[in-house]
Length: 174
Image (cartoon, rainbow, N blue to C red; front, side, top):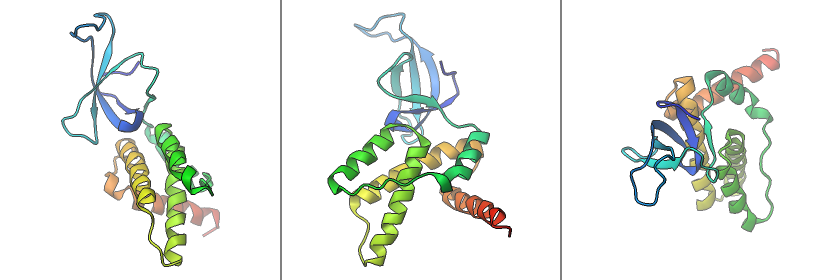
């Protein structure tokens, strides 16, 4: 069970703060069933009410500082998604996003970054679908990482690039 004030990932709502744990005073709702009252970081003033024992929507604690740093260090080794069937591409992106798994979000970001470079080299723009999922994956990942690392999400991409570059430099003996 999560605690009041804790940050969690809640399904496709992304990072949420647990504002309260309470019962609901509503017709047809058991009075002894506990609910989380969540405040999504992406929706100022928004509230989500979900049963503590919810099995349908994935919920997990956000990464701590050590886990966040380790994840960034592991990014170069995380595999991209190679999907040759265009019709299956969006379905794969959706599954990765719904997983609530940072590594899956990174796979999307890496895949779409490479795809963007390929298309640019061919004189083409990234597709609207690819752009939407790239922005979504970056937003989810950077919003989660900004809390334990204390770095604003707007600066996260450059922080990650710098950290990975520094690590690569050390491995290369620079």
